[in-house]
Image (cartoon, rainbow, N blue to C red; front, side):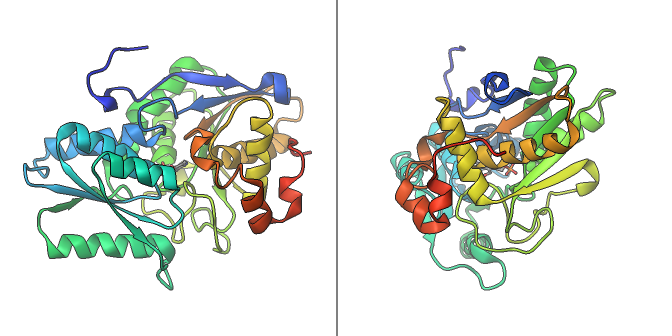
Length: 324
Ligand SMILES: Cc1ncc(COP(=O)(O)O)c(C=O)c1O
């Protein structure tokens, strides 16, 4: 492991979980949770702040502001604290308590949105609040992860080449779709490569990113009430949507093997298993699933029986098992 003097100097852990012993498939989880922000958003926070420094928009009196379901907010809190820059995070009621407390401990001003916008949901209400802050005070600078090219570039320059180096002959890469920074960065990188894996986008049912009806979603990370601004589906080979109930079941099946991952890892792995069931009948394909964070922040939700029972019913809390 490296010696670091800034928390955001550590972004790529190069840790993979080999799931062959559990699934009988050549499938690996790329673990993005081993850094000080505990998620893939650490590299995005570092890249967006570096871009603002480069283009001169980050000045000594700047107050950074961002809308986040939690992980980017925490990562930006870390970068901002390290650089002595003020930061306001606009999150919503789905953000877990530990993440919120960690942001506050790092000196961030946290605003929690309780009421969704009638059309654009909680995300729309969060963005509206950010825009209001920027209108009222010119010191506020919205990094805007939804449209900032530094978001997908962080994955184009970091995540994707790391995977290509570790797995030079990869058949399929499964990526979750939230802001679509991870998806677009990896898709663009591999489309430029002579040998490219199938790029499979995975999202949760109820999100607008990959089409279908929008509906309530309980697990933060993936999904969007309106299609992500950064999403270009022409760069994606296949799409899969997974229910939150299956997400929970897969997270719990992983936990039964000793690996506690975050909710979106369950969704993306669920999508991968469904896709591989159809396209890898002889179990010869090698694939990587990007796992954006670890499970410690999901103890009150995905891994809490009462919460799961209340929101998804008894089937979702049954003994952990991989899908048939
Ligand atoms: C846990 C988790 N998973 C997945 C994602 C989606 O990643 P992206 O925004 O790059 O689409 C996020 C984004 O916040 C996240 O926090």
